[in-house]
Length: 112
Length: 115
Image 1: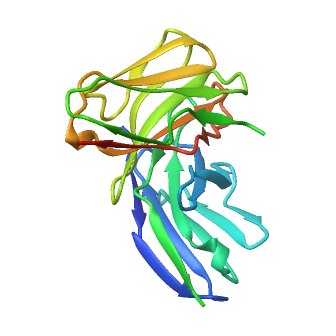
Image 2: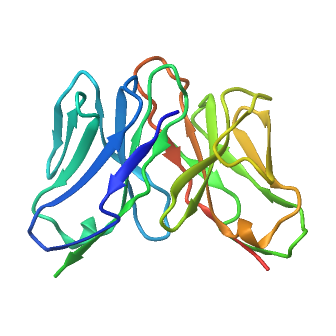
Image 3: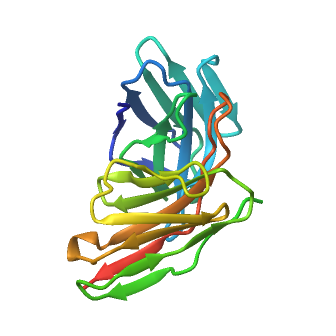
């Protein structure tokens, strides 16, 4: 079955700097890769996703890149702000499956 | 906006008690899920359902059961709660897959402590 590995488990960056979180997946049939942000005391919320026919996607300060050959994808946050502090989860699924497999999460802290 | 509502945010139960965690979604989603979240382990799938009265085991179904009598409601049942089931439980829903990827919408979570 699908397995998703996420690194690092914790990340601390200076406000204004960039943050990068990386994930690898095992099932080459995976074709959908969402990223979720979980703020303290809340459920995870989708922040960006990418499908296998695209190599990169941007939405303001966040971007996701996908390398299907290497089976890895990354989340990039630029010009980080205090409100970016949260736990981030990557995930992968493939079109014939209704379930998504999540990575173990990255706790991102933004230092003022 | 999609809304997934978990009826209990915080529960304290005794070992051996039967525990019900209720979840309701308002977007007519076919799929519903129960995840368990523990530090360092991410989100682990307990059970999911892709239709009324249908259920499938996830990665960690032992000690749990589920019920889906209506499309909008998915219940997680701990038949005999144990201390190792102390955790945060997340309910989620999504549309049925149509080859375009599944956006999963989560509830706010239910914190369960078993003493």
